[in-house]
Image (cartoon, rainbow, N blue to C red; front, side, top):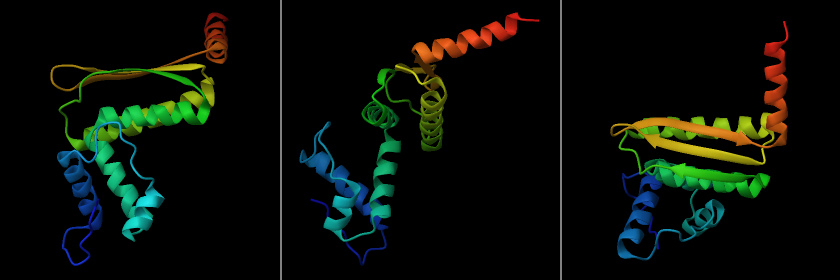
Length: 158
């Protein structure tokens, strides 16, 4: 259960995050448990849904690997595309770097879906010496192969 103190100087979104952390620490929430929807939690706590969304977004950003996993699960569900993840351990990088990697992956996924119309997407996050070395997204499928073939034909023709 998450309790909000409206008289506190702590922002509501921070109180929500702290409530989730407390619930995990107490064993009330376990990894893999479904969280309430943004709307459902907002109605329960009597707060603005944008406040709950911010809490969820910031909690996800604190764990890049979890965020990328959820992001690709949404792609699977929404577009029916197989997504193969190959992710390293959680990178020890500052939150702004994690946010940037998340946004880059989000943009790359949307571009791949829109332009390559893949049947499968491979997403790889590899670590270098203590930090992120590379984030790779590779589309697979007939439409993507045809695009690559057309591009290679153009480069061969004088």
